[in-house]
Length: 236
Length: 124
Image (cartoon, rainbow over all chains, first blue to last red; front, side, top):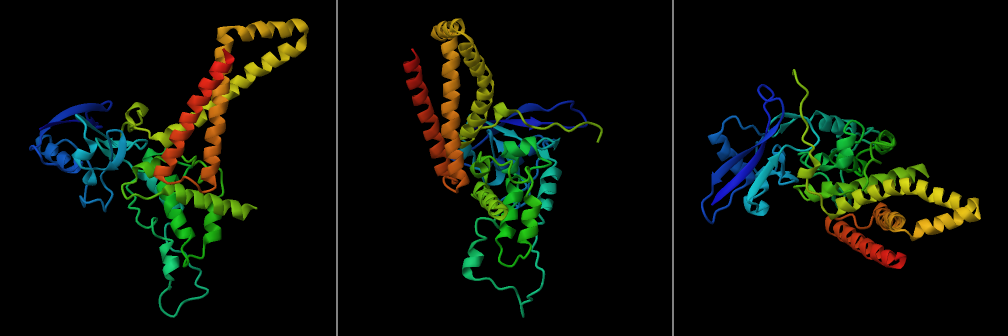
């Protein structure tokens, strides 16, 4: 079976602007492969094709890309799931393109850094050994800690497209909530204070593109909803 | 780096699911209503200005062009109301999952289309 790919190409050294280039790949009848496998095969034909990848199994979050209009990880998206005559591969939307499918994630990481993505504990009640959590307390982190920061969600979010410098974005906010409800973290008040402004959290308008694209099946919209409630409770 | 890096943000290449469309329509209907308020206020002030003004508005309203404007305005209002209620429910923590969010989005859009047709029939 012949599979056609249309891939976003841009090489800052030779191209003035990006363009779409078509590729053809022969795929043995009755077999399937991941989008990343296909890209690797195409790169053998055209070594100038650039993309990021590392673990090739949906753990590292390097190969986030826009596959036929929807963000996802190339390594865990089978060609059969895309099921299109022509598979269009474009870089994650909204972030500057360094080359081909490789994007500059600085803005994304800056927002992540803002929420202080680490445990803060004032050490007033130091435990004898480690900070213990009950099973219930630990369960609150489920659906939050699994995020691999692939940027599929934030780069699918219109609010993030228009305000990448002021809106934390779904990924950052998912992590923010992860620390806000961690029983071991004592900086809840300061964290909420940092998110108080009109942009950081409240640019989220429940569009839910983040939930639609998350390759790990997480729900940033819900986490943001919880943060909004916490901010509201604090204000009244 | 010599050049400004390009950004891939060609909206025609990006797929939107039902919940995203519901949210965008909410924004669009809001903008339409802002403009519609101007037209409505103008008709109100003209109709209150004098008996001639009132009859002028009466003839205007019976015309097809103005009926379309009224239908558009009411349609935007209906959508904004329905979509707004959906967003308020989400703020309260309901329908925040992908399946339920999309279901309510489709429901709101369907209900809006039906109500718009009902209003259209009433107007004509």
